[in-house]
Length: 431
Ligand code: FAD
Image 1 (cartoon, rainbow, N blue to C red):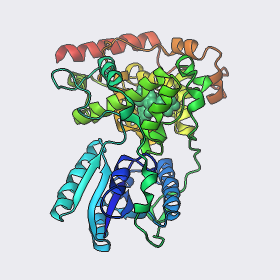
Image 2 (image 1 turned 90 degrees about the horizontal axis):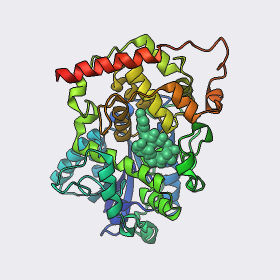
Image 3 (image 1 turned 120 degrees about the vertical axis):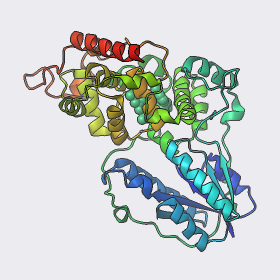
Image 4 (image 1 turned 90 degrees about the vertical axis):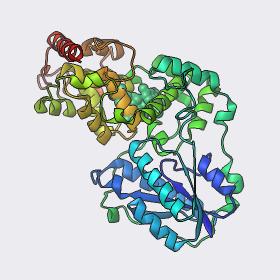
């Protein structure tokens, strides 16, 4: 007899809400991870994130084995895997952490129904955010749709109760004891091991100067923790505690942006696919495939755009300031649908997070949660002069910068600016 802790995007033993609750339950706890075919089937076989997850699973397995337990790892569609697990083990209850993306919600609703029909309890907990869903609402109990007032309340509500760690290790003796369990190979699941470097979890030294340095891509002064927050190899409570300890309030507000977008996605799941402000779906995008290709490959002739895209293609990461510039350039200068850029980022970013990616793209396209009017069109030339004045970042990513080999600008800035303002105006006045 056992209870199951179902790991999804919370891949750590320390400070894990559902694991803590499970370990305090009545039965020994067997942790489970499913390599979900519904998700994996959509990914290219060299996807670096799958390698990251795989390596994390190996580490979890070995840590659990040291406790005389193990991680049960399965590959397949969750609905089928769960029937298998229930045949192999006598399961009394399943514990897991909330997951807010549309697919995950549907999966968990189905699981709840299935487990209930099998008379198995299904307990779920908040873990990946400090405040979720309905914890920060306007006075009339509706969700905020702009960040500033949301953040004001977020900060006012924050106290140590919300970010103290769950002391799971005190209860490891309640882990299910078992002989070693098998681990399917990456190749068995159709994937190749990626050689991509993954960011290390050593970010505290970046926090002191974050506020003054974060906008300069050449300084590389941000923490690169996105991937770890995405898969839960870092607890958000630990990150918030570190922000406060280092008095890094600007960084704290960035962590709150992440939650703001997750809250938006929860309340407005359509905004993952359609414009948050629906009238923006009237825009007549040009969607020129040749120009899209030039943007993807970093050959637009605008150095700050091209440097960013090449950084993304090579490393799976791009600096935030540059993400804003390339996204503005694609949607506004080239008039290409934000969904094309969103999908490209989703494929390439190691720290891809649906809520933040959709939020960031719609912010750039002006169709999302932003109080600023649509006529904000970044001037890539000025952005470069301001944020990379010595061309250090640009030279790092564009070796041919300043030579005849470097591409000519794909479109003239002034012309593009006038064009986008006209197209947006037309779309918005028609609706
Ligand atoms: P730091 O600057 O050190 O910040 C720490 C953490 O705070 C980040 O890891 C992230 O979790 C959170 N954070 C910081 N800025 C933001 C923000 N603006 N919105 C939401 N969360 C934030 N972030 C993602 O995590 N995944 C994405 O898929 C993603 N796509 C984006 C797409 C566009 C078009 C734009 C403009 C931004 C996007 N961002 C995304 C937000 C931001 O660019 C990244 O979180 C940040 O650059 C990651 O680098 P870092 O880990 O060094 O962040």
